[in-house]
Length: 497
Image 1: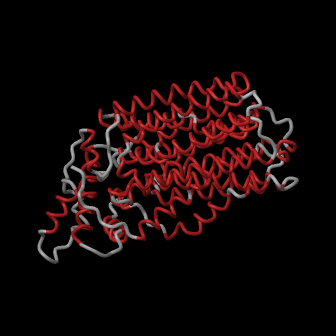
Image 2 (image 1 turned 120 degrees about the horizontal axis):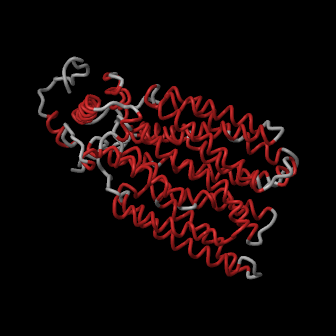
Image 3 (image 1 turned 90 degrees about the horizontal axis):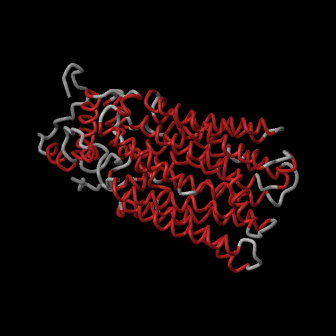
C-alpha cells in the first residue's frame, strides 16, 4: 500500500537536501570543465602535441579515479556515515582542483583528474543515498533528484566559465576553469558541520535518541507528534529486523533472490544511463560543433547554451517525477531518445560535409533536444531509483556496484569515442540508437514502480518479509496510545526485533 500520509516538507529538510547537493556541483563542474578546457587554444598549445588518444586518456582517467572513489564510499558510507563521507569527498576534491590548476605537464594534470574522479565517485554515490534517507516518501523523487539537478547546474556553470575564459589569453584561459572546481568543495567544508546525520544510519548504529531528534527536526518539530513517532517506529523496527536476518557484507548483495533482483535493476538503470550516449555528447560536444562547421567563440558559446537546457528540463522532471513515476518516465524517455538520435545521425550523415547551414543548425538543435529529453527522464531517475530499491543493509554497497558499472562504461566511451568519431564519423550514433531502444524495452518489461512508498514499504515489491505496517497504519496505532506514553528509544539489546 502506498502511504497516504503527505506532511508538508519543511524548510529545514529542503535546506539539508539542497546543501548536500552542493557537493553534486563537483561532479557537474569536474565533468563539464574538461569539454571546454580541451577546446581552448592556450591549453592545446601548452600541452602540445595533444593527440586524440591523449584527449581520451585525460577524460577517461577521471572515470578511473571515480571507480575507486565509489568503492571507498561503499565502505565509508556505512562505517563512518553519509555525512562524514561527503566531508571526505570535499577535502579530496579541493586537493584535486589545486593540483589540476597548478599542472605544469600532462602527467600532473592527469593525476589531478584521477584524484578529482575519486572525490566525485564519493559524492556521486553518497549524496543520492543521503537525500533519499532524509526525504519523506511523497517527495523523495524531488529531493533525491536534487543531486542530478546540481550536477546539471555544475555542468552548465563549467561551460559558461569556459566560454568566458575563451576571451582570455595565456595560461589563465585554462588554469582558472580548473581552479574553479575548488569552489563547491570549499562551500561544503564550511557548512558540513551543520548537516545532520541520516536518521536511518543513526538507527543502524543504535543511536536511537539522535535518530528520533533528527526525524523531528526534519519535520520542523511541529505538527502531530504521532507522525514523528510512527515514522521512527517504522524505520527502527524494520531496520532492526533486517539487521537480525542479514549482514551488510559485499557477499550479501547476492545472497537472496530479492537482493539479486535489486542489484540487477540497479546495474541496468545505471548502464542504460551511460549507453544512452549522453556523456559522449557532453564531453565531445565541442568536437561535434567543429565538425558541423562552427569555429572560434561560437563553439564554446554553443557549449554554454547546451549546458543550460538540461538543468531547465530537469526542473520539470523534479516537479513531476513523484507524479509520473519512475518506470513510465524511463521507458518513454528511452524511446524518444532513440528517435532523436536517429534524426541526429541522419542529418549528420546527409549534411555534415555540406554547405547547408540550415540543416547543420537543425542537427545542433537535435543535439540540444537530446539533452532535454535525457534530463526529463534518466538524468534524475537513475539517482533516485537505485538507493530507494535497496534495503538499508545493502544500500551503500549495492549503490556502489551499480555506479561502478556506470563509470566503467563511461571510461570505455571516453577512451574510444574520439577515435570512433575520427574513424566512422556519424555512423557511431547507430550504437546509441540500438542501446536506447533496448533500454526502453527492458525497463517496460521488468522494472517495478516505487513512487510514493517509504523505503521500508518498497521491500514488499521484492517479496521480502516486512514486519511493519504501512506508515498510515503505524501512525493510527501510535495515535491510540495513551497520552504521555513516550516512544521506547532504547530497547533491551537481548530482545528480538
